[in-house]
Image 1 (tube, rainbow, N blue to C red):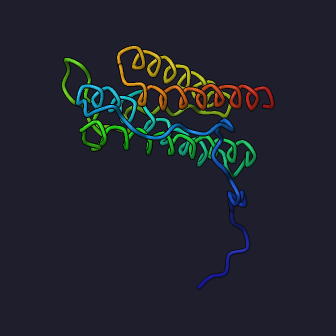
Image 2 (cartoon, rainbow, N blue to C red; image 1 turned 60 degrees about the vertical axis):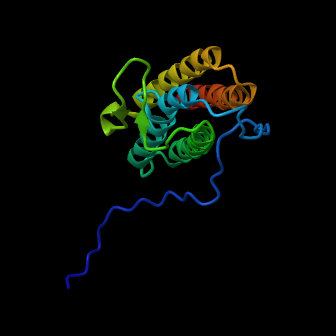
Length: 182
């Protein structure tokens, strides 16, 4: 076997990364009663075009493409992705408690169910473009959660959604700070 003396390596360490979340507790994951219509609304937040599944995958993709060159930025983005994973998990629990099914299918009102697809992802070329796209995605998520809160009359579900919004607002602040550092 031929010995190689030149190589490329990603030496960015992801040890110790914590979720990028507001330092506030989450309310208990509970519901007033089963409600398939509410489960369907949350399925859109879970696995729709604007969803936690899309956010996680987008952040991981960006982190992968940045880590070799911009390790501190990649570490921050991975922290946001981990927080989004926690949101996905909480939404999944709520969907099950509401009598729905966690199958990565968004059940839009009056529309055909759509399974999550990587076609929902964008592929911005540079770090600045990635951060701008991430900020816009966070704003869209907040708008969607706000609309769903207005449609859901379950204080327990809405408490979790409002707490998720706090994290999404925190992510926007972090992303704007990262953008200023570039």
